[in-house]
Amino acid sequence: MAQSDSHQPDLDWSQVRETVKLLTVSVSQVESNMHAGDESVSTLTESFTGIVEHMTAINDLLNTLEPSDTKSEALAHCQQTSDKIQTSIIAFQFYDRLQQSLTHVANALKGLTELVESPERLYNPMEWKKFQDDIREKYTMESEKILFDAILQGKSIEEAIKIAAKADEEDDEIELF
Image (cartoon, rainbow, N blue to C red):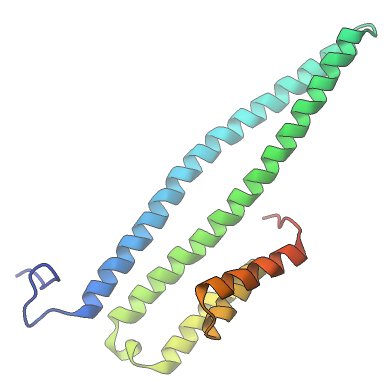
């Protein structure tokens, strides 16, 4: 017998089951998109590795030539390309940060699903506190912790984002993972 759902509710219908379904959809979407993003970034990483190797070879070849305006111009283009590669590497670091954050979101949603599915945990404030502590403990970025704390203190989403962004601006360093 199929479980009751919001499309055909009966006396067995449960808002908890509906919540779990929606949380599961969210987790699935996050994980699916992260997987697709990983494939694209892997392709880009391989391409950049190849570009760096070719740029090094070109630079080495240019340095064997006699001094000339053409050689100087070509070396300048090599340097500009190297600078653009460095900028791209920084962008990859931001992608890595996004990836970490989305992994934390997916894990928190999975944990919330497990908590909501368990009647003995769902109505137990100590279980909620433990779950919240577990989520915060897994955060690796300070901005995640600040955002989390602000939300738990009752700040609106907009306020929490501003607080975390301000902390990020003050930190203003790229975190390497």
